[in-house]
Image (cartoon, rainbow, N blue to C red; front, top):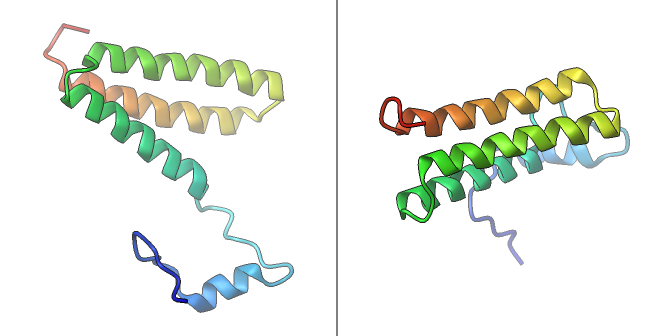
Length: 108
């Protein structure tokens, strides 16, 4: 049976085979694939809710801001490194900025 993907995988099979061999490790500087997919899905869902007028931009900003507050609490409780926490907060800040940019001036 052929391996079916919704989206073609950009990595070659040779690279994938190297990574699954004992001792094979993904490059350190690549973002976490699960985290990337989750973030894209979440941001897309929020934009869809705003576009369908089930959520306002201000409410979307509040959701993202709440996620940032929770991120800090969870990171501190788990002893996460400051750098990792700051990377996560930077991503959430960019998402929040994208909703603020869509809102008429001065309304948020």
